[in-house]
Image (tube, rainbow, N blue to C red):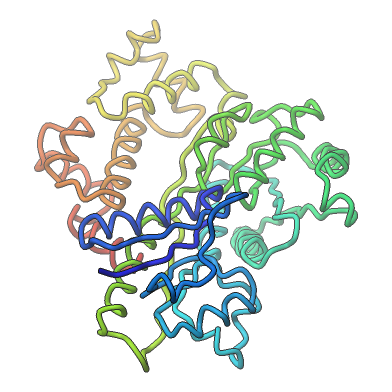
Length: 394
């Protein structure tokens, strides 16, 4: 039986999703004997993996020295945190199999999301230590905005002390937020940073989303659902990458890619945006429209009719249609279909559910009805969309 060490700090959402994907693979294609090292204080380590009989490793390699030590075991390794020190082509560690994030696509999609909301002012708040992944998201975000003739403000920390202590930094962050032209769309490098932005907006008495809209990355529900207001975030395809990493490691442990093998790079990136009130900018225009959007989102699994919606909101259909289109530029029916089909896309990408089950889950009469609506909206069949997504994620 394979003896696999998983070095994944589960306090990090990305690592939890990688772990979930790995364990799903083990569930379907195992068994493996797994030793999980989560990075907790007082945790039992594995100082001598060879004594345990380790046959494979997936996880974060914290620094060059531990990585070199693990490489002496002569077992297949898949690194999940390839930092700058691992990239130098002269370093043998640069040839390790690895899992990497497509940060360029994430920055691009964040910019396109805000452009679609008709913002004119944009800003970026990066990770405090300017990590490579954060800088890549910033660069891509700004570059995509430039394509539409827009610029982005970029927040920079004022001192080393502020980098170490948010209590010190928050004063500067509040001042920067106050100076931004309003309304402004802020892209935060991750959920932790996004939460700090929202907390600073509250401290500076800046209204969200009326003056500032905030979008972050990771979709950590614990963080996003407990901010005020709740925070929109980008969900990534990390779980699928974990499944693929386990598949690659399994092949190597079975000898299909052992010894002189070609490096495998597994990429994860943008899946979809989970919208929450931090980007619900229509609050400025019409409370009725906000209630309409919330009702549609909550009931995305039901075939809601416009008449039903008007009755629930105690307004005439004509008044609802007129006010909704004046604010969003879309009809109520088109918004209902858009939200339901967005959910269909998510289920196609992130679950193995059959098309028949997806149709039932999303409130369509049957698979044929769903297929027709999907083709009209995306000019692609359901099966073709799922194949395209699976190909791109691999």
